Length: 390
Image (tube, rainbow, N blue to C red; front, top):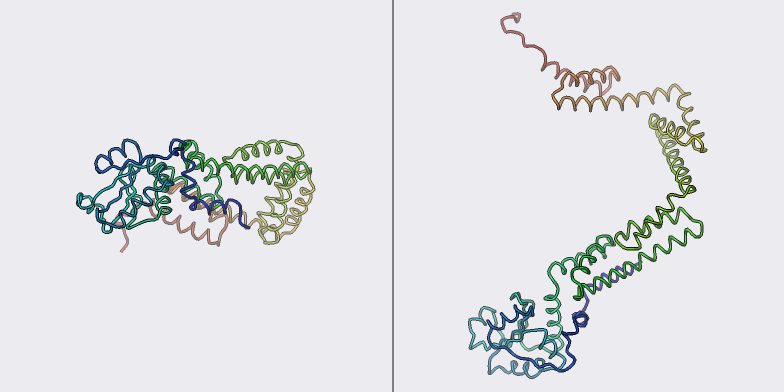
């Protein structure tokens, strides 16, 4: 089943520039028709764009270009485009024959060519030939959004979108909170707040489900649901509330007793599996722990019975002893290696001798003896050549 957030994430790349344009401050959306003042000097227009933090719209054409005249008489004078062109851009017209070097630098090969660039001169869109109003408006609004959105915010918003798509809500929430705080009322900040609200609603729904389980007396199920809400939606207010509710349930005496029942039951199940698999030493350890720590529970009696089955059978007990010796020998081997790395050969030799004595005629003993021989060869005094028998 596709989650609401999967569908939401799929829409992120499709957020229209028009929607973001409507989210711009009211000052950028004049109520009355705006007068478009076309600049004709590139350097002056570029400086004005930098000073005002506005993008540039550059139209490169020639006086005898039919489609240049069509663009000027149509889309560039369209009332629907005038507000954005007048207040959201620094509009600039260039005659390619009067500014050939600039046209060459822009790699203009077709007239008209429309260039949309940021205040820093970075080109965001390059449109060759005549363009309809709708397409030009769409490209212009996208450029306004890109300029209004800092690089870090765009990057973090993209990462948050990916995180939501992967159901990694904690990472998404962290990123979106940062955007909402620092981007403020910019379009990306508004969108981040909206998505945070949607995530919060889903998390609150999970919290409400957990509370319903608690009210029905399904305490363990409620605790599991609360733990999932805390883990899955970390960073939301609902997750914080779920953590407090979970702590409150954990402190209840009946919950503590239930937890003891469950731990003892699970440990006994593992001990029985060890018994069936021949891991008798491990089985004995778990049974002794259950009998000691959970003596008031029925599981303690079952553990004692299982323990008696091993201790009362010489073959099983011998096998458990061998497993214990093997475990002990492995620990002594590790200790010998640790002493050797510190240059303490005497202590290492003592550990190796214990291994040989503990489990003779085994792989551990063979390895220990080989290491012991190496140590002894290093510490044996050299025999003078003159004393060597012929």
